[in-house]
Structures are given as C-alpha cells and as structure tokens.
Length: 532
Ligand SMILES: Cc1cc2nc3c(=O)[nH]c(=O)nc-3n(C[C@H](O)[C@H](O)[C@H](O)COP(=O)(O)O)c2cc1C
Ligand code: SF4
Image (tube, rainbow, N blue to C red; front, side):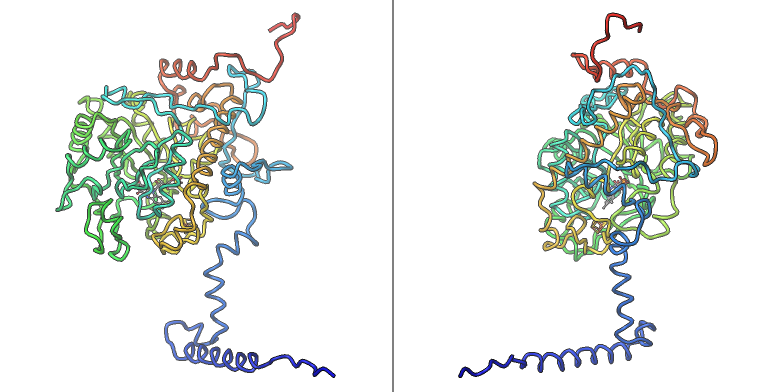
C-alpha cells in the first residue's frame, strides 16, 4: 500500500509568522514616526491612502474619469493621439459627447458648401499630403539661408535632460520620417538629435552647447555647432508658458557625462540656468543680437516667449518698424503649456493662455504692419486638430507640438516628469526606465501622429473651402455663447477682417503649391446638362 502524500506545510509555517512580524514592525515604525499624523493614528492602514494618492492619476484615467475630464489632456484627446500614432481606427462613434449646445466659449468651425478646394474622395486621402508653411522663413529679412518649412506641424523644444536620450532619438527619427523639424530645447544639441531629423537650435539663458568655460555665450562655438548639424533656424528662448521668467537647476546627480558633454558643463555638478539672458538686456540689444546671429550663421532667427506684460511687444514692434532690424519668427507659448518641472504657481497662474496671449501679440505686429513679414508659430495644446485650426485662423503659420508628441511615443500622462521616475521612459535619465523606450518603433508612431494631424488639418481646410489651414480666416470660426449665439473670431479678439492671413502673394503661392496637377475630387465629371 502506497503511503498518502502529505502536503508540505513547512513554507507556510515559516511565511505566516514572518509576514506577521513584518507587519508588526511596520506598525511600530508608523506609530513611532512623527512626520505623518495619518500613519500615527492609523498604522499600516494609513499607507493605503499614500498608495492611492500615488496611483491616483492612473486609477482616475482607467476607471473613474469621463471622456472629457482630466487635464492637461482628456481621455478623448489622448485616445485620438494614441490611435493616430498606431495607425489604428481614430474615429469616434455615435456622435459627440461634448456639451456643444451649452458650453460657452466652444469654438465651431464653419464649413462651406461651395468652396474653392474640392476635397479628395476618401476620408483617409491626404494622409501623406505635403503641408508646407505658407510663408518663407527668413525671406522678408533676406537671410542667406531663408527657406520654406516643409511642414506646418513641428516638434516643440524639449531638452535632452528633461527627456531621455531614447525619447529625443525617437522624436528626431520621427521628425525625419514625417519631414518636419525637431526643436532642440535649451539643453544643447546631443548625439540623440543626430538621427536624420532637421533641427531648430534653441538658445536659452545658459547657452548650453554654445558657451565657453566661464558659461559665456560663444559665437564661434555656435557657428561650429550649426555647421556640423542640420540646423535650419535659431530660436532665442525668452520664456515658456509653463514657467515664464524662471531659471532652472539640474541637480549634479543628474548631470551625467553625456548631458555634461552636450551642454558644455562639468559632469556631476549642479547646473544652473539663469532667469535672464546675459547677451542682451532690452529690445534694442535683443534686436542687435538677432541681427548678429543671422549675419554670422545665415540662418533665420526667432524668439520664443510666453505673453504677460505687453510693453515688451509694443517696443519690439516699434523698433522693428523704425529701425529695419527684426526677428524672422515669433513662437508664442500659452500658459497652458507643459514643462519637465516647475512650481505650481508658475504653471497655474503666470502668463496668458495661448489664444489670449497670441492675439494680443499678433494685433501689435499687425498694427505696425509687420504681420505679413513675420512667421508666427503657436504652442500650447495645439497638437490637437480643433485647437490648431483656431490657431491658424488667428494667424499662426505653424504649430509646435510638445506633450502630444510625447503621448505619441508612449507617455501615459502619469505626470511624474519632475521625479525622474517616468514609467514609460520618456521623461527620465534613469537608464533602466529609458531602456524600455525603443526609439525605432516609437519614431514610426511619432511620424504617424504628425502625419495624421496634418491630414486632419488639410481635411478641415478643404471643408472650409480653402487649400491650406493657413488660409482659414477668422470668419470661419465662431465662438459659441453657450445658448443661442456665436461670435466670429475677429470680433471676439478685436481683429480687422483681413488679419490672420498671409500676404496676397504668399496666399497665391501656397494655393499654387497645394493645388494638384491632376484634378482630384470625389465626384464624377459633370454631366452634359450640368449648369455650374
Ligand atoms: C518635458 C518638457 C520639456 C520642455 N523643455 C523645454 C525647453 O527646453 N525649451 C522650451 O522652450 N520649452 C520647453 N518645453 C515647453 C514646450 O516646448 C512647449 O512650449 C509646451 O509644452 C507647450 O506645448 P504642448 O502643449 O504641445 O506641450 C518643455 C515641455 C515639456 C513637456
Ligand atoms: S508618462 Fe512620463 S513623460 Fe508622460 S507625464 Fe508621466 S512621467 Fe511625464
């Protein structure tokens, strides 16, 4: 007779007392500590609250939040970016779940029944559409390397340091695939930026990548840098919407050898970005510096800024009109824009949101008759088609996409960018976490997203009867009052009727560029009895 096998309970006899001892030790620690009243009062149990707080954003995203709740990006908006990036079905069924009728301030785009531009037949047609800028960057000021940007959608400045090397590489390869620029951000030009994508080099207050050993700006280093990389334009960063007029500090622990080499700073030491530039101190000296950089490099030169006090813009426009010096482009960043890390008061309350800031600046340039000579770039949640269309109608010639591009390469909006613990490897210098992000795979997703956004912008322009989003005028967008009326954009923002559009010559040229040689359209040729 075989002996019956008795289950081995030895492990359980050992594990249960060990677990009990661990819980008891934790409870004792909670009882003794003085930092957290909740834990003193509710030892061990109180820890559930901290766990829930830590994973709250994820829980809300997956379980609790509705489609249009959550900020910065709603579930609908993220779903659209994710699906576009993966080339999955990015349509929504059963109609809108936005409260269109009762939401004051809701923008409505007014399509035209008979427009100039005949939409191509299928909804997906135009995915590979070429969507160049309606203005030639640097042409108005005769820069040696003036050119027409190939894409009206480009990747916003986000430094190597705030983003991982793999994220920078994915975005750069994505920019190459989609035929657009990647802005380096203020952290210098890293090896990860050299993956084939064209670049806009950003000069921040610390002049990373083009500074000498004392931290002073070095024109020679800048010239060497732009000569050795596909840099198409220079952007002087005055401020960004999420943290205007605020310096920054990258702790020494994060200053790896790679970051140190890219920025031109010693490794392992705290790295300070001052809040103001040393190379200029007012509009006059700013314009002198712009002209110096443009003359020495031949590149178009622009400024990036959030909008607060308007005195700066008034003075800048007056000097440009009266002295003939000037910037080639102006990037306006909205206060709703993103950052790797910033104090709450700055992200929440300093600088105007995009539409208000942009329109105030555009109006000043238009009143000085300079609006047709400057390329206007917008930023601040403009990587979503509806927001971007309003920006184009208001006078943007191009839009920059920051966090939306991060979403396309895997960001889940966990909002831990400031902790170096980004779970998706996008905004971290932790080698293990960054390793999870495959630049080759994600570059294709970034490119898919950028192309889909351009496709949607083209489709909406066609629905409005024009060939290009830059030709959508302020009459084509109405702002609903939440009950019975809608006000056209030009009335809402005090624009003259023709403001927001490129010059007549630029309009004619972009129509020519956007008009296919072979006629397109969904309908058959007109019948012999057609009357129109
Ligand atoms: C992680 C991160 C890093 C950023 N770094 C920079 C930077 O170096 N320079 C800059 O001008 N803006 C920086 N920004 C701001 C973006 O370029 C952009 O202006 C802003 O996020 C608004 O665009 P979005 O709403 O499409 O993200 C950063 C934003 C993020 C999210
Ligand atoms: S997933 Fe990473 S990059 Fe995205 S919000 Fe979270 S921490 Fe930031």
